[in-house]
Length: 224
Image (cartoon, rainbow, N blue to C red; front, side, top):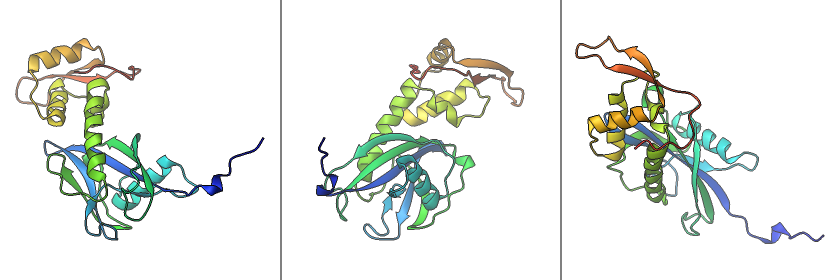
């Protein structure tokens, strides 16, 4: 059976770009790097780079993230592909975007390789970005809110034992709105995803009940 000759097709380059979110200073922040090479030298961008011929997409994303920012050992989820023909001035480049939500207290940023700085920026005040990274970031913000609505991803930002008020605060930061306390507590309790862990006695005011997230929870849960 005759095979189609793949060598007659021009080959695009493939990159990975990583969108890392965190809650810091009561704000939803995203990790950006400052490029020190062209194109877009000295411009801010998402961390990322080219996929090597012998590595998987996820391996490339983890490598680039570690090389450019010092961030490692975080769970990355593939987000979407972006392949407009002229999105990169160097030529035909298709990028695969990844997204993650991390606790910034456990991360020490360290810029290296082809970037001169790695910094957290407020998702509400994003400066001009290189390439089409603003488009990637905007899509990531929409996807993040969906995950907050229908998964327990927000709980990854909490300590092992937490009060429901801590959950509510994270949701208010991400959605930039206030939730009625009574209704929020009622909804979270009704989901049957929390386990009571006793009263928090390390506070001077009325001690709240502490909870932990149950194991073996379904992938899709309507949180709000």
